[in-house]
Amino acid sequence: MTGATALQAFRSPNFSLLWAAQVVSGFGDKITVFALAFVTWELTRSAVSTTLAVVISTIPYGIFGFFGGAIADAVGHRRSMIACDVVRMIAIALIPLVLLVGSPLWVAYVLVFIAAICSAIFNPARMAIIPDLVPAERLGASNSMVYASDRTVEIVGTLIAGVLVALLRESAFYVDALTFGVSALLLGRIAIDERPSRAISWSRLIADAADGVRLIRDHAVIRANTVFSLLAQLSLPIVNGLTPVLVFREFGLGPEHFGGLEAAIAVGAVLAGILYPAFLGGVRKGRAIVAGFALLGIVLVAIAVSPTFPVLVVMYGILGITNVVFVIPNMTLVQQLTPAHARARLFGARFALLNLTWLPVILLSATLAEIFSVQAILAVAGIFTLAVAVVGATFRVVREAD
Image 1 (cartoon, rainbow, N blue to C red):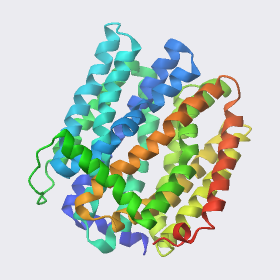
Image 2: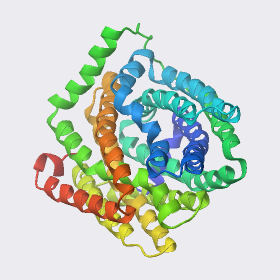
Image 3: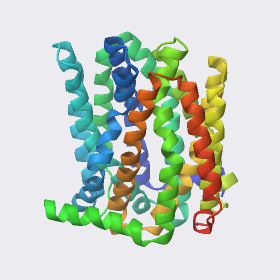
Image 4: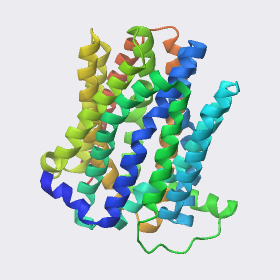
């Protein structure tokens, strides 16, 4: 593949609408993360509370994720995405209002939690709908463009988020709410033939959720890929949750510097996402995934020993590159191996399993950060990830998956 081939995904008007919706929404996503983390730090000065503010949006994936994909399959991928955007717009818009009237911080957490439940439905639906919007031969390139454009938005969005939060504080949540509304309008213009919605019942949801787990269990390649990826990604919640503590406590800096690190990740991911089809499009997906996780481990160790903030920015940029190396082939591999009618429930099951493994790691790392330096914790996480990649490379079903 070439870089030009990747751009051919935009020949589909439906894909272009999906892309545009996510670009708009992506500008606001970081605002909520930054605003909640900064407000929490200002009120509590606690590493545990600040880490919780960053990761609160991931908790529903572990609790509700198994059902999110099943709901998306039942309601329809496009329909469920639109409904989720509307609910998220309302929930996020309420956050500055409850803070303004002096409500406890946990009320804002509940609203973010509600929005995150919608995300647990939205994201499997998004992954499931892409193969319906583009020809099969452009699926990998389309995934690459989605990921690259998401990260492109983060470059600007994270920088703007840091400034907006510093200037507007709680009012910055309104911007994110607006982006969800625009996204819903754009998604409403996607013209595809969806199957009629099925009636949703708890028994049917449980059966569909179980089906997603069964699909993972019964497919040898997906099962091996899932187990390997779950173990190799255990370092990600650590770096995601502890980055604000690293910036605020270890380096004594502010939200704009936190935004700078997030933007650095985005820059690296954009470059890698655009170049991925040309340089790694012909590589077996399993090999690319193993290599990406090995690089992730090495970069985390490098982050741990970074002596200055400018060096840290460079390391976070490289971190963004490594993310693409394992994310894109992972997405494409599972999409290609999963029946169309069950894609959302399988992705929902994988997201749920991922976040269930993340939750204890988040709590443990946040607790350890009250005792040890963030750098020491990141170094251990990097060594563990590298070890998992080395072991995974010895299994043919992991290494040669395609």
